Image (cartoon, rainbow, N blue to C red; front, side):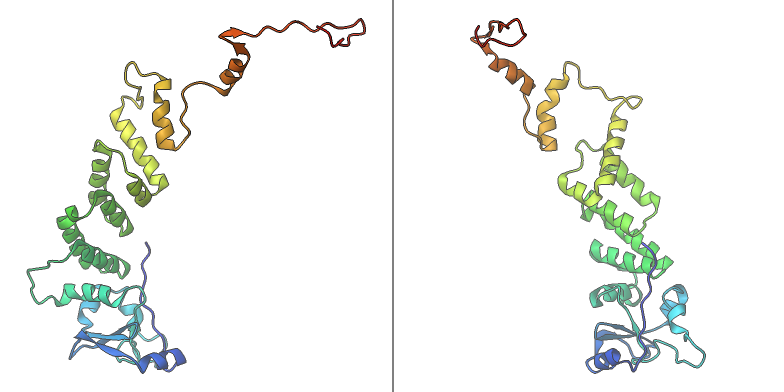
Length: 268
């Protein structure tokens, strides 16, 4: 996932003027002394730019500095508020909670809240918040399913130390991915997982059938898993041969006699 930044719209444009008439201040994060104004939908946030200046140049520097000499700095008033389009009000509340949590030593939240924080920290290039969110996700990772964790970690570009053990667990467990897990993983990745599972269980990449199992013994399983019609091992051609037998004995037809000119006489 590539980095994304909030956007800005110049005050005075028709769509901005209409929006300004119905703005509301966020009940918690419109802070006295705040010097950075952000807008999501019709909700205005007023927060301290210190936290963003300290870490996230991708979020802050490129947006606050004026585009042209003489222009007003963006985000310094409600009229020039930075418009955030990649997060909802609730998601941004979760993100700001990292900085404004009144209990410095307690950060208890659902794991999905931490994945939201992780997503925004990654998109806006907050490296310290990204590491913090990863630690919290790791601490709570058993709260969600194995494959869902894999997909979320991949989406937010978690490092190998998070992903490899999860894939190893999936390939080592006795059961293969379910239909729902396959849907989450995608076709290509599921195929690779099956290949890894087979290689781990075979010797030298060769995985023979159990002793005493013939290829025909696999037909019911193949039909069930691949959604194919059940096949007993008898061919359509065998059915044609059956039609040419009577009481278990082949039907013998008398040869057709031909005239001297090579044409059949119609008599037997």
